[in-house]
Amino acid sequence: MDRVALDTSFLIDLQNERRGRGRARGAMAFLRARPSTELVVPIVALAEYLEGFDDPQGREATALVGGLRTLDVTLAVVHCYAAEARRLRSEGRLIGTNDLWIACTARAAGLPILTRNVEHFARVAGVQVVDYAATV
Image (tube, rainbow, N blue to C red; front, top):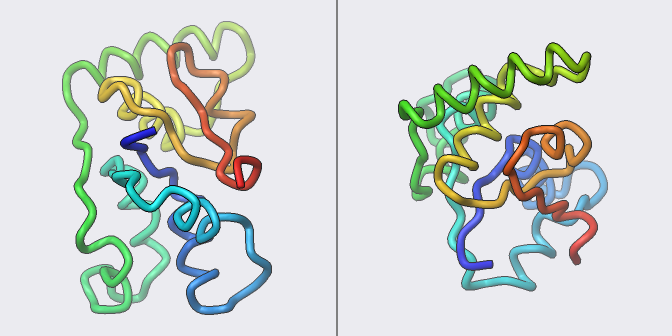
């Protein structure tokens, strides 16, 4: 696994683990076990993460994510989103809007998504899901 797309859950867990908040959920252990893995963040996951800060452009907010490459929403992502939202809704298995954008962004980039939210992301066709808490 050379590159992975990060879900918001990974970013939040990594931040909390670095600060000693709450119990370790495996984010830091995943990174220690795979130091050469390139981390990229879908733009929607970045927005979700930054929403948790009083100043989303401040030092505290950007300390963890400032150096990460972002994955933008492209036409391929839009097509994935439209098709998967329609399919999942018709099956009664629709996931959250942001999760679907994140999954489609990872799929369009050909990257696995690194998350603890395996159940939702696994519903999106063609998305490889990696549970960082279970891989350590």
